[in-house]
Length: 536
Image (tube, rainbow, N blue to C red; front, side):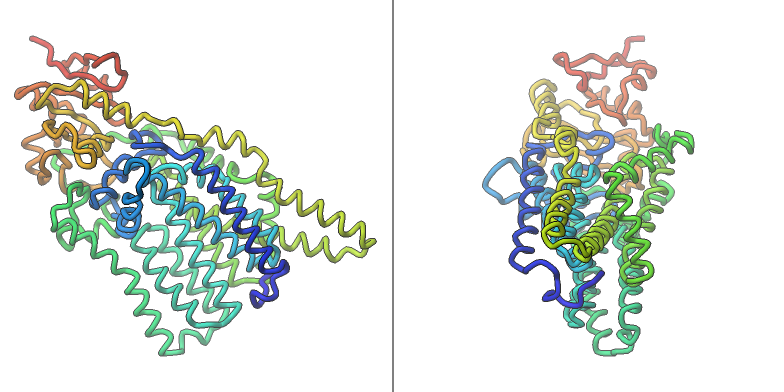
């Protein structure tokens, strides 16, 4: 299932390149057509982090765990493009990373399948899958993660085919680089090591190769230095403050997600997903696993994985480590009630897409070997090729409608509502909303005090407050953030002037009403309210 060199790949190189380019252009057109046009609102489950990332990338801030330094710096370059607003350019970066990931998956599938059509079908299946497409049209980190994972797989396969140590060295650098981006990349370490050992068990004994590999791996980790440097430079938006060694480690290892909160009295209520019964969670996980590919492609992928287990153990161990590791990670996050748990499955879907390519390649070879009349054989092969390219496209119209964010101006409406209607010098309580983008990127309404006293799923060491950040202890005293409902923050702020709430799933109206406030809609908006204490 794995040709030994690029020269033995079934289709001519030029035709293979054209087909891969066509696949990339096709998914690129779909992504651009459905791309979010501007700043996004905070929303469950897709855009939990998007409005923050749009602001952080533009001002080179420090993001939530695990910080995403490589993504921040690379995506910041997109903000210099001469069209669209900065938020659109950050969204566009996700589409570009997504197209690149699909193309790299095509190249990796070509090495596994030996047939360009099979590689194209597998790459299309990934690119048009719901989880992947949903992340390619918003500001998010997961298409970039898929690109890094796909590159590592491609260069490992290329190294095996050509036995050129340069590809292996490039892999070690990319593995290190991927670890600066997302925790899922840790699965590449055991997967890649097993692949190398199963391919050439003498490779680790080559001292020169190992020393270079370690050096390049460490070089790939260098972007992590961005995090403490930007924190010490007083980055305009610093969600985790990795300015001390301990905070840095908590950030980059994801320890902030499990650390006991350092913020006094900050007891967060579990999400509705966390409270769901096990059968509901299992069904949600099953829906994601079974909802990305058609039944035909799933059967092909499973059969191919079974076949690879006997014919190409190195590849099946590499892809299996990714698939089952991501499955376990997603299950843990689902159990914790993380609403966007499904995005952690994207590398698993990528690995399965490569199995699909391998299986379809085997199917084509079987069709080519049938001893029936030459004309009949050609007709059968043409029909089969056409079907293989059509199958991933089934339902693409419905998928286009489902993932179309080209008219999503929800974030812009929230900014304009606050900018136009909130009184001068007022306090606005909100949670990870586009208001940071308003004050930091668009530099509007900088007279306001913005405070986010609401719960996050990680341990915050600072309270992100405009116009100045404060330590957790200072925030508890000044803004009442020891009360994660926002009630105490509203009560204290109301002593000094008007207070408003930008409501969402974390900041709910009923909590304030029960605490003795009237929630007065502002200009008939269903998301912006003035918080008025009731007279006793």
